[in-house]
Image (tube, rainbow, N blue to C red; front, side, top):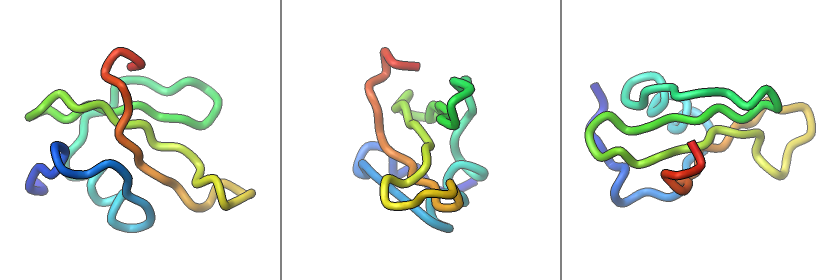
Length: 71
């Protein structure tokens, strides 16, 4: 399990984001538009994984902290 950094991070991308999702976060739902929502099992912090805004094909994903009420 990856050490929890949810209280200090706001955005992650690339391999670091992918590893953090796999090793630490619990998937809550997907919106069908390419965004997947997660929650930290330790802190309850909510995360959204989406296509990074500077890419077109969706190959680059970004994990950003989001409002807990959105998921």
